[in-house]
Image: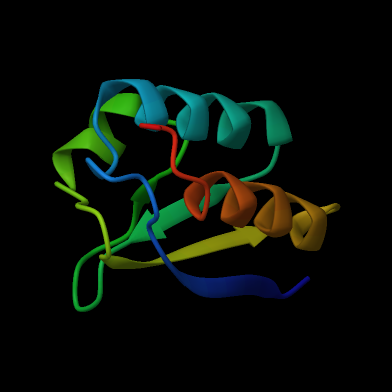
Length: 90
């Protein structure tokens, strides 16, 4: 089984702070497959960990790479990318 990844730009005007990070981490957890998120050049963290996601310090306009492996990886990546490309601070 191969890993699927996608690099996207974060749209939330205040980045992945508590509320959007919680939405993202919960969606990653609900996927039921391993999902990671990473900033360019950084180590990937478990996307289902809200503390791990917040610790990345992701700001508006930052690029991140999300990766998933397993059944439904493509659908999971699409759903998570939609979350990250939506401004949850409006």
